[in-house]
Amino acid sequence: MENLKEKIYTISNDISPVLLYGPNESYINLIARSTGCRVMPRGSQIKIIGSGNDVEQAYMVCDELAGLLRRKKRLTENDVYTLMQVHRHNVQVNINTPVGDDTIPEEVITTAKKAIRPKSEGQRQIVSAVAGHDLVFVVGPAGTGKTYVAVALAVHFYNSGRIKKIILTRPAVEAGESLGYLPGDFKEKIDPYLKPLYDALDDMIPKSQLKSMFEDESIEIVPLAYMRGRTLNNAFVILDEAQNTTFTQMKMFLTRLGANTKAMITGDVTQIDLEHGKESGLISGIKVLKSIEQIRVVRLDREDVVRHPLVKKIIDAYDSYDTAEDK
Image (cartoon, rainbow, N blue to C red):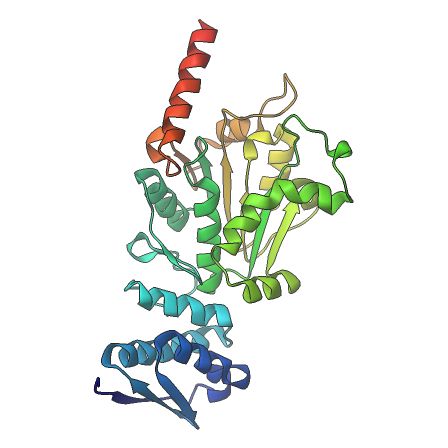
């Protein structure tokens, strides 16, 4: 039988044990379930009993949660999930990084369900660009992970306390199908356009936590048309499928950005569904803003495709066909 190890974490006087333990000691119970240890809070001390590595992991999570609580003044289940995921993957992340420091250690994006590492050079450039710029355009073909990485970064910044809200938006432009003929009310008509954003969030945040974040509007997923007139402060904002915005829509979106806000604009200029003759707001936006140093443009190509290997061949085949047709 494996020898059990015991370790006691003592909570400093400037930390409220009640806030650290969570409602009905739910945060402590989560640590216990995740590590397999017995985690027993008593006053200002937490006794941890289990195998050596598991005890050390639980102790470190308690210590980092205390540091996070000292900075944020409150904790959520998402904070606990994220830290457990970080240690499960042996990712070195300083959870006490001061607010305003946008560094993403070792190019690892931490979410509640997983630690995500860039899978291509282009994705690494996205992470680096977002760490150093408040507005980033990401342009590339299907399958390069534009939307997924953008949502992962938004969740990472929310979990770290850097921002207070995640806002995801898309233009509702038909790709060969009219909204008017789709069944249901407006929300039911528009949800299919937003489904990739829902899917990405579901892959990164536990369902119970995701539900509560929607309820308290920590996460908003809205059509682009609903952004007019708003000022977006303390948020991470993603405009997805931006190739289907018009010049006016892009300008409207860009002028919504407020204090302490990050924005990512993603799109594929080979899949524009606008009426013939209308210039894409993604293309015009990059042209208009090219001289502003605080804005970064990351361009992905077929080498950054991370879906099925066949996708690269499909992209090449269509590119060759288009070239032949042009000639």
